Image 1: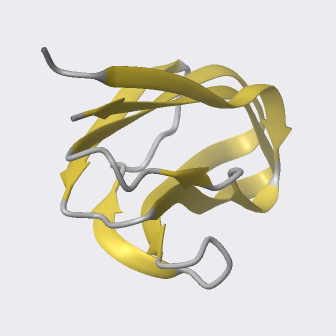
Image 2: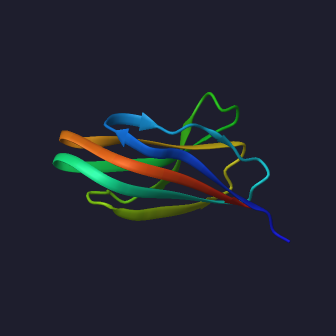
Amino acid sequence: MRHFTTAVLERHASLAGDFATEPYETPWASEALFFIRAEETAGENPLLRARVQISADGIHWVDEGTAFPPITTTGDYFVRISHFGGWLRLAGTIQGEEGRFDVTIHLVLKE
């Protein structure tokens, strides 16, 4: 039987400027999916860019290479990754004149 877990990294968070989610320890998992639910946007031409980051120790981070397509409107978005090691998080930026996104971010892990 495969094992899985779902973690809520951000719940109804209001993001502006640069951001990073809380890190999550993942050494037992072989697959991961990040979900972003963009619940509300504000500002002129808001744009959310988010990318997956990995870490060996949960402190020092590098880009894994997977990124969400640019998000400009409310909706549900996801990316899949594998071969990621011990820790995962999302990092990104909100652009646009006084741009803001209200989001919920989930991380789903499978063995």
